[in-house]
Each structure stands twice: as structure tokens, then as C-alpha cells.
Length: 226
Image (cartoon, rainbow, N blue to C red; front, top):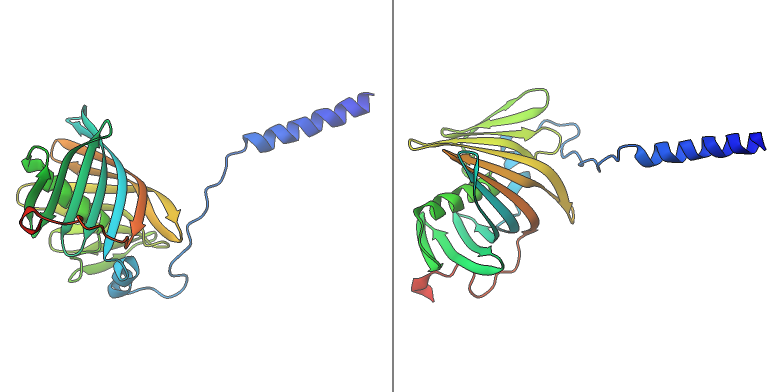
């Protein structure tokens, strides 16, 4: 009887240990296992087959580290430099706007000069490889570092996923951080972005991301074309 109790106790402890052991995340597949890529290889791997990206997001906005606003948004980004963003609060569309050629077109909702800045930095965060063509590539033990005239981005050497990006302009300095990579049908992307612009912090959770989605009739349509 004692032997049976002892064996049962040992079995229970083993089961408990297995159940409580930390779960390992699926490892991201390495992109280059042997050869060191050139800058052109990295850019081609990152965005060579991407023309449009659609993201369904939750966005939390803080000002001076205090809660400022929270919303949900559907974001379309398209090269070169185009953004169509639909913003929702409590399930109601509150703003619908397009940025094209650095011009803001309001389709619905009140106009706000910061919308263009938000849309532009979301474009830079998602299409990070755009406008790095004339840059220089550096390497350290774990990262590739790409340096252009007004911005620097750090990439993971194994996966080529972005880690952080700094953008400098005469008016402001922007930092973008990337975290929590996920896989959607073989397309890996960071699902958590943080954008720091002056006193504002935008935390963007990419709940869904689609590569080259089919566009609708009213996507990127500006008032002059409607």
C-alpha cells in the first residue's frame, strides 16, 4: 500500500512540474543562415513583394505619460507614402482620412493637424524599409544597423525583423520600438509598436495584418475623386 502511495505521489509531482513549466514560444525562422546579406538583400527580403499592408489595430494614446485617448483603427498603407485610416470609438466611425503626397484629406470627422503626423509615423513604422535605399549597413553580434541621413533602424540579424527605429527632423525626434512578433500564414511581423513623438506616446497593437489585400472601391479615394 505504501509503495502504491509513493508511486502515485511521484507521478502527481511529475505531472504538476510539467504543467507549471514555462511554455516556450515558437522560434522565428532565421532568414539567412550562412551568407551575410547586403543592404539591397535586406530591403528586398523585407518589402520587395509588398505594395499594400492593411492593419486592424488598437491604439492607446498618452500625453506626458497620462491617459489621453484610446481608439480602434483600420489602417491601409501603400507605397509611395499613402495612408488611409478609419478611426472608431465605441464602434462608431469618428474619423476617416487619407494622406497622399503629404496632404491630408478629411473624408469624415473633425480635422486635426496631428492626424497627418500620426498617419505619417504609422507609415514609417509599418513600411520601415522605405527611403533607406541610400543608407549604410553596419553589423554587431546580434543586429543589423541601417543608417540614413535622417533615420536609423536596428534589425534582428537572424530574422530581419525591426527592433527599433529613430527618425530625426528639424521639428521633432521620433522613436519607434517593435515587439511581440507573430506569424500570419508565413508572414512574420511585430504585433506591438510604440511610437514616441514629443510629449505623446502611441501604443499600437496590430491585432491583424494583411499583406497585399484586395482594395475596396473607396480605399484611398480622396474628395476630389469621389
